[in-house]
Length: 156
Image (cartoon, rainbow, N blue to C red; front, top):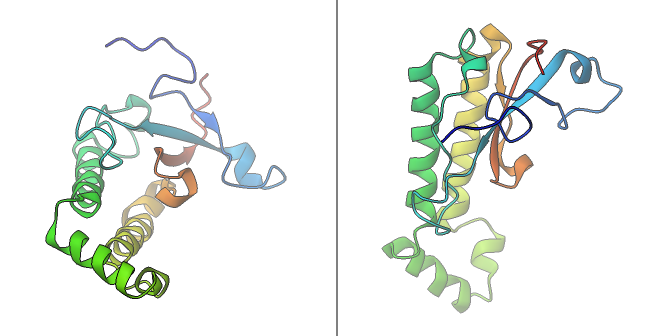
């Protein structure tokens, strides 16, 4: 599909809503949004399109970008599956304990999503920091987009 240039285009650099307006990062960084892909598993799990935004080319190579999206999608599909044995165990334990099971963070979904957030932060420190790129934690975008913070490319 052809995307027209504008906020719906995957390469469109958005102002950074994840930092205060008074922050220097607001002026010097932009956000590239990777949209949800509803065709992978429908609404069973939040999954994201692996359409490569070319504006990332000097900072994140295409194969690295696809590996990131594949990792994120893989974890989300696995953990949000309602048909796994662990999902049924967590549901049973939630009901049996009056949902204290979830409140104490013992459900596998919460544990694995925390691991995914840690993996993203680790990637930001190991790989992204070299190029000034940062993947915003998925919870900040409510799992609706993968927001990638990049230096302002001065386009758009």
